[in-house]
Image (cartoon, rainbow, N blue to C red; front, side):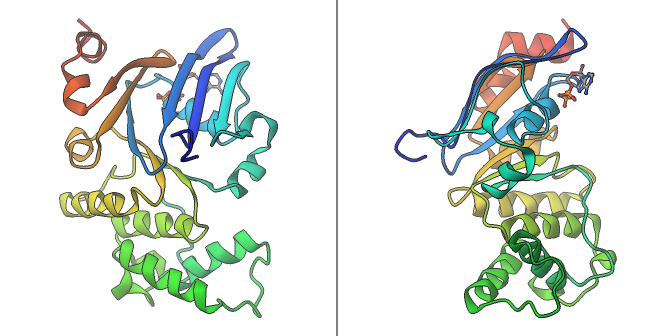
Length: 248
Ligand code: ADP
């Protein structure tokens, strides 16, 4: 929501599992078009936070807004996905027996609820969008290849492309460069910088050199709340962050 300067807004969110506070008074804002990196040690609550935003986990307390008007806690997971919040898990899940083109086409069909109808055809606007996305995800030369023959990095890009076919406002990505070669990682940074501005992105990542190339703002989660926020340099020099990471 441009007028209010935020696309996502969490305030004092908490959730417990068997009495253990996985998320503890978490407050966080994402601006429209922002590319935000989320870091934090294992168990910090990064996955649970994503689960709350996408409606997979319901918090015990707090506020979660999409833009300034949509109270996400009133909606189910499938409804939230349909609002333009796309999520990508760590492992790529593409249809290996289908081509790159067919995977992208299918992402749109599924979105339209017509599933695998053989009568489905892309209209010209959709074809243009698909062509543009192919360029963005560095797969324009691989359009007719079976997804199963792509490299790990290319599969990750294809899955991002499938999310983009649904024109999401907010993308949540879990360790997108894990397992990538250095070259794939560099091209993923390029891809994210292209997406930034048109989409808001929240990226959970451990690769600090990757974060350095893509992000202006980093949020450090620890024990279910925000420990520090700022540029990578700022948070890396923050005493509390150093203590948490180095256990001093
Ligand atoms: P991260 O993604 O930062 O590693 P998680 O969000 O996965 O952290 O987990 C935060 C904490 O909540 C961990 O201690 C984890 O064991 C616990 N947790 C997460 N989901 C559940 C669940 N469904 N039941 C019980 N404990 C959970």
